[in-house]
Length: 240
Figure 1 (cartoon, one colour):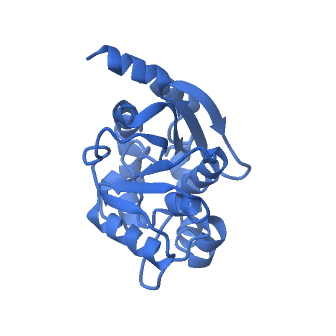
Figure 2 (cartoon, one colour):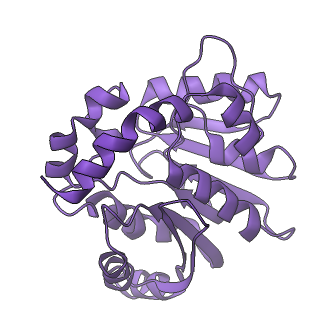
């Protein structure tokens, strides 16, 4: 059995308890979860939320969370004390509806709609920040871990990152350039146990982006990457 399978099998019961706990969610994200609404998070969600709050500046006016999940936790944690136009998308209508309920419960206004990556995002909207906790578990690994069953989620698309865990990330980066300006930052996270750092760097380079920084925190087994779309936009524009 692979080491990552052994580790996950050992930690899963504790993680399952933590990622559904309403008081823990409120402590970490500052977001209250309404009764009857199930919301989960993972370590990457925690690190991504902290990173986005650190990166966002007073000059930023419009942000987009791709893959809001059940509670748009990263978007709402940023929106609750900032004057921002906040948009969120997800490929699941169930998760969009859940995120809107959580936003209403917290009296935070966001725009949130169903979209497979950027397919339904109006163009030429430009965002100062785009952030995403993408599916990054390699297909074979996720199937071996029975993630859809264990996470009690509505489909493999929540975790399935393709053969090497980077399929969705690559497509996200390719599409994102249409919705950025030269000053925009794109932020995403993965767990290195599933996608090693050198693989992520290759994806960033292959998609024509510049790596701005990596962000880690003690005791969080994830890595967040901040990339600049400037180089990718130049490549995209030269192809027209």
